[in-house]
Image (cartoon, rainbow, N blue to C red; front, side, top):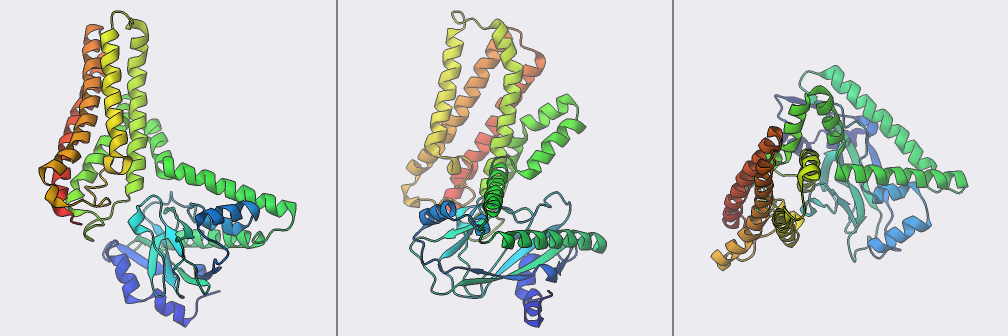
Length: 412
């Protein structure tokens, strides 16, 4: 059913369009509403719940399609459509202090409790999200949201935009019908269907959080379209490029000061870890066959001890620093800086773990390179080790510079 005049007025509201235009310039993109996807969503008051634990227990006891909303998920399947986005806009219609909308691939400051007249938007086909209950909060009335949808496409590509909007609209109608059919299942078939839906949602959430649909398409395409050597280079050093490009924006980024570009911090961490894992697999593929043939425990005991010690020190410092800080949580403004009066002592406490991590990795690569020269490792392997060492030095120096400056940019 098409939206009425009041909903149309909200769809065309100047403030809503202003939100879009901050990211999608009017001379590059057209933005049109999709009236056929608009709907009102109503949530229970939640008086029977007392926190997330009770929600999880309820999900196990009473299978229902509503459980999917309490599981990290992406609404639509069309993440692969290029140059276009379908955005879902949530408009708060009633008072709400209990239900919290969370975005696990962004960061905690972007979690939203949508109250009356609040507006939150996200990509319908790409942004993972879910809802839970804020601690010690209960709504006195049902939480009601108006869900609006917009298609964004390159300026003048009207047929392509209409086609993409039609795909999302048809999928939304089909999935909504499917959810309603098993909202309160009574038959064994219905309960089994709900459990399968939840299992599929959980599996897709894990895939998105650890690999990502874009990466799962990008990496095989690079493998098929590129030469073996080019694939080796581009996948071995992608994580350094991602880290350096993100660090380059650290001075104008962050949530603490409320200015600049927003970085999807958890997605950034996911991509770094994924490409670093691929990089380590490449290194192992080149080094281990030679190690298996040439390494002798008695003769090379010192080399083994040095490499293990360097790796252990780097790993220990990484664990001590924590994943959020290791991947620039402070520089990007997602971790608050403590009292600046600590001065040089605080700066040294911040710099030291980075120094140990990078030094450990560089030492491990250096000792391996020295052993490789002695035992005639292939030139490709030696170039790979040298390039990794150089990239680590560059990233480490950039980390130190950005980390120290962030102490003066972000204030508590």
